[in-house]
Length: 295
Image 1: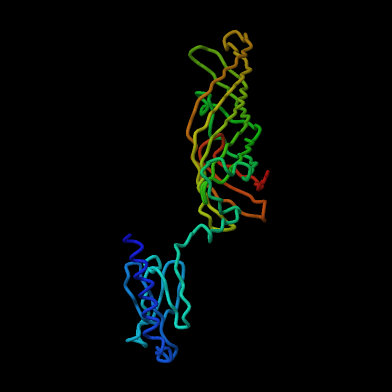
Image 2 (image 1 turned 180 degrees about the horizontal axis):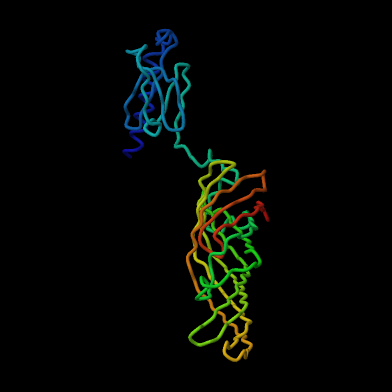
């Protein structure tokens, strides 16, 4: 009952105000009449309404025609009777009607509650490592490094948020070492060749600064390393010139953290190049990238 009474009161106020001042429409603020604003609490404001938008209403006071604009929240106003006798009843605004989803590109991401929503719209990277930085051979520092196959990596990163990507990286490397050691105390000489094959798989998170064509980034994650080493050599006794062939192999696996930083350079809408350094199979890595959209 109270709600109906209040609303009836508002309508009476509007009609009364319109009737009482109908003859004054020629009198005006700046010569163009006045408007009546009826608020939700029953209060009446007379003035010149200049703007009605989604959140506020702006009007000019009758007693201050040259004064500043007055702004009130839209949700506090029930109705407006304009100087041409047109009455507008204001309803709550549904903000979702005006929402427009952003277009996805390399820097933006459609909102989603699922972390894997953009799994099929990522960046494929293929690179080569130049400086070895990981080995499971315990005394590798005392061995002489020989030529070996450079580290080869393939990675895939997909956007999780605007500047954050998740991805996987796999790498292969083959390192060659040699040893030529003489033991004066035991009177023997060891000569051997060692080949170590390494494999790594890592789950990584990448943060990009989003600076345009030249885009620095940093990434970190957890990696799995697998190593298999094979040795082929000769043990020669110095006192009687006897020699014995030596062959053995060993394998091992471990987990470790990966921290890398670098820069991505865009070569076009889908292609690019990258250069980074840090922990892993190789200290330095560079390669090319291509943007995929598997949808």
